[in-house]
Image (cartoon, rainbow, N blue to C red):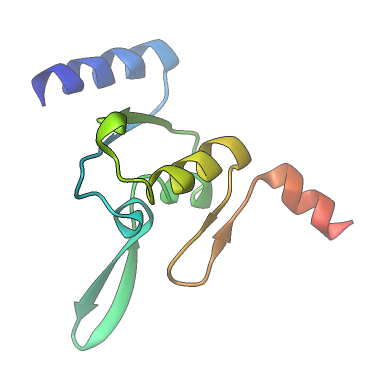
Length: 107
């Protein structure tokens, strides 16, 4: 984690923006990238993960993807869709999309 942390810190200093670190492994699933479901007091809540909350909270974050070569095949299309099309279907029913595409839908 030390080397990844120093790259993350350097990237943050260069871009002057928040940086989120996502470590990918063979065990990383599509759900790990989107949302995590937690149960509190008998009620289920969805907690946004790093790749899901930047567009939702109108922040511009740089994602540091570590271990991309280890990711399973089902994870790569999710990342590709997020990075290329800026779209993601979340488990709680929300659909994240780019502002430009949203504006076109409203016209």
